[in-house]
Length: 82
Image (tube, rainbow, N blue to C red; front, side, top):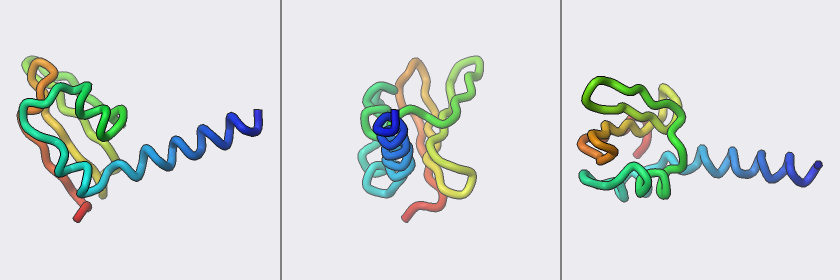
């Protein structure tokens, strides 16, 4: 049980570190959501709209936001990462 908790803690820390400039530069318009998740992991928050979905990886101060249409990247921005 202790090993499981340690593994979960490490995975949580690794997930946070994926919000960086190196990974931001790997994201490209036209990528599938699955390709983005391979780079950034699962989004911390996704909000579905009528014609698109806005997903955020990270916190309010440091994040990558991606707009998806039909599960394809159409727009992406960053905040707090250099």
